[in-house]
Image (cartoon, rainbow, N blue to C red; front, side, top):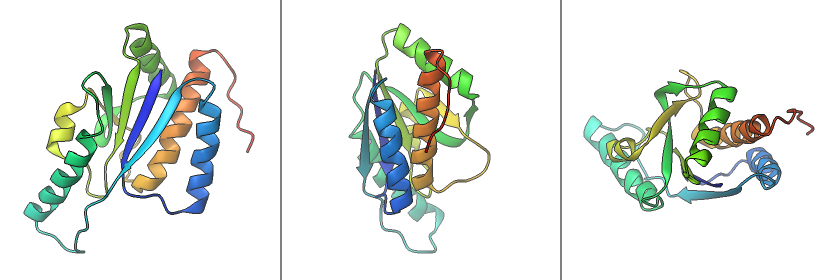
Amino acid sequence: MKITIVSVGKLKEKYLKEGIKEYLKRLGAYAKVNIIEVADEKAPETMSELEMQEVKRKEGERILSNISQDAFVITLEINGKMLSSEQLASKLDGLATYGKSKIVFVIGGSLGISEAVQKRSDLALSFSKMTFPHQLMRLVLLEQVYRAFRIMRGEPYIFQG
């Protein structure tokens, strides 16, 4: 399985980089995982609704340019479907079973994702009704994907940091 995470913005925090590096190493036994960072759009502190839509549109174009036609796209959205870790494992297992070996997870910028990206999405997934920093979501997503592979293989999940 080939998993790509397309994420808006550059990761700066050392502790997040270290956590992500650890999960990428662990996931190497199960899948090829690639993280693509697309530039976030510079935006003023206060914006009109029109300006916010324009920022999301530009970021959306950058996201979509990194998604192949044959990929199954999962967007992370507050109003998406909530799944348990076991349900996510089952979903990924089902995709692999039915020949969908390219999976792209999309993490939008601080304003969310554009309508065009939402339309391209095959599954809108929510981790919580709470809002999280999009940089932190990379780490949370990788942890859950790792957990899903462990569940699929019937392996125990033990974190040893």
